Amino acid sequence: MQHLKILFSSCLILLTCGHQGTYSGTLPKGQVLSGIDVLVKNNFNILAGKRVGLITNHTGRSRDGKSDIDILAEAPNVNLVKLFCPEHGIRGTDDEKVDDGIDSATNLPIISLYGKNREPTGEMVDDIDVLVFDIQDIGCRFYTYISTMAHAMRAARKFDKEMVVLDRPNPIGGVKVEGTIPPDSLTGKFTAIFPIPTQHAMTVGELANMFNDAFGIGCKLTVVPLENWTRSMYWDDTGLAWRNPSPNMKTLTGAILYTGLGILETTNLSMGRGTDIPFEIYGAPWLDGEALAAKMNAYGLAGIRFVPWEFVPTANWHKYRGEKCRGVKVTIYDRAALDAYLAALYMLKTIWEQHPDQYQFLGGFQVQMGCAQTEGWIKAGLSPEEIKSRKLPEFKKFMKIRATYLLY
Image (cartoon, rainbow, N blue to C red; front, side, top):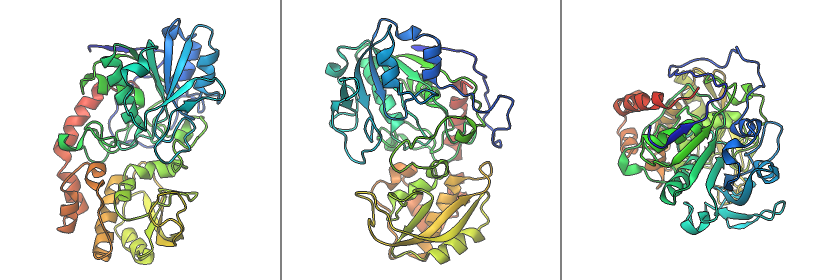
């Protein structure tokens, strides 16, 4: 593959696309090494003597919790000259556009890729040789860190720079692929940068290889792979510390549900932002949570249960901030059996049927859903299974492409 260079260490290569259970373990739990750990183990060999621009945030850390910024700044054979940050900023606490700044620990400039520019300009990369990306993704198409990575890769190609991606585990596993693949008319957006499923079951390193080759970026790419990670592992199998990847991604359960039910945020529902369990609770002041929970449980959806719940969202700019919302709390009892995307379709259908005068599909729904017809299909009374089946042809095509880029 043109422009593709992959560093293989002691990786276990699995080209598995079928549905499996959680990690049952031939490798010792707690021994997963992220790309930064492998880079350190190899004495930073691919960065030696080069001027480095690091794209990271608070999740870019080694296994023992040390920041990538400190690691690269202290490496004697690496010249770290500049930092870049994604949505939510270098510390992962901002919930609006992010400004440039200065890192207080290293005095290095921090360039925002979630403000005026989302792709590094020529001026931004003029004094570097290589862009290094290390940010924890959660395995969902519309989680914007992978779009930041894609934009950085485009800049690397445009300005003839090297691109290094330090791989990280997919916290919701590398097996289950679900959801919708957006058509070309809905891609190129920050929440749908390329036509990939809602839940892609790939690591950022695998995505980078696919973006570079199958989707034609064509930069000088090196992926530093994981060690001791297998596709059936969830985050709590890795032994790595959970750090909220963004202000309202606070639990692994929330991350698992986000790939499906998170789509509902592009309707006039609250996801409980600002509470302790965002993306595990869904509601609105006008919603009948008792009726919704009863109907959702009656469907008998695998792996998931619903209970009535009341909450008050507190996050800035969030719908119904400070108002009591009535709705449901979602509990996962079988990760392997759960289809979060199908559950989302059932939630959309049920709330629309129960509250047709109050429920609204907002402007970003088509992009986040990855389909321009879904709202119409729901309102026309199509079943969730029928809606899902209409997207199968492009899904099967994607699975063939995906298999080419699996590293583990």
